[in-house]
Image: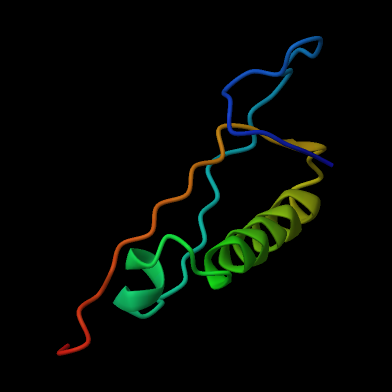
Length: 77
């Protein structure tokens, strides 16, 4: 399955959009703020895998426009 952060794929034509899919994960603020954290790429991979599952369920062959956003949640909440 093709996974791309761009809205188009060079050499491919999007015939039909099947909708928007989203996933989220709550992580400690210190993980997001520590740019050297080895956990962050693992979180990205985990979220991408969940989105692939959505795509397979929708009989899709690609995910386009993938966007990650990590928002730190203060520990006092």
